[in-house]
Image (cartoon, rainbow, N blue to C red; front, top):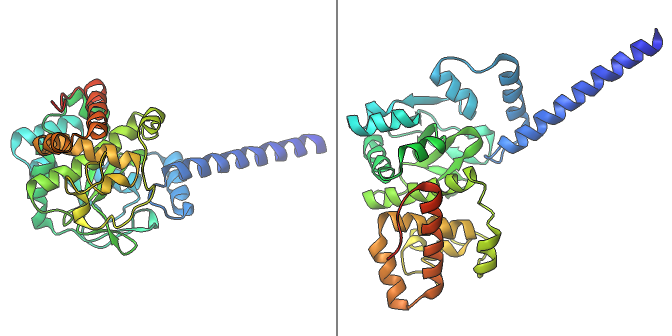
Length: 295
């Protein structure tokens, strides 16, 4: 009897241990916000036990960990054709009425000025207009959370994708000109694209191209994103920070300001930047079905 009881206790203890470790690993994988794991672990445990609620807003709040989240259907802020395209892709907008820290982490999503949403939403729709519908659906972007300012510590950031939660956080105040809004959204969209295709770490790119700081130096300075402000081989100063930022900047500029990028390459006779641009364009052609070849 004792051996049976001891075996049962050991089995239950083992299962509990394995379950705890699985939740810890999953929480660590999901916790892109940089916060403590305990809250995410409890959130995941609740989902495992109870499933996700049927109500879309409650579901989005639970999945994202942003419990003040309010959904805003595309048809509320977009023209009919664009709204229908977003609906087919399963993408909706969201906002917050109070400052929140997603995942209780290091980011602060400030209360949304709802009056700014339609213009930003329209530019996001314009940015995605040439992405094929099947590719857009495959990206599995479910929620675009529009914050007032988006802060990491005291530093303002434009946005960032959270692939495990199928969402993207964006600042409404980061850029104001239509072309600039499209540019920074497409930059973040390319990060999501690389994450979905498991190519954020690209060994072939790293073999071909060098010279990265591997640090964000003065990243909040908007002039760092201007075409032509980087050293030879780079589109701007921001692209010098990390290889994945370099590719995202090239993709965004190919989509929004290809003539200026081509002029920079031609004026400098910059063969390295030309090679990088061809590389990103070919990746987009093969995996996104978008023709943005530089010449």
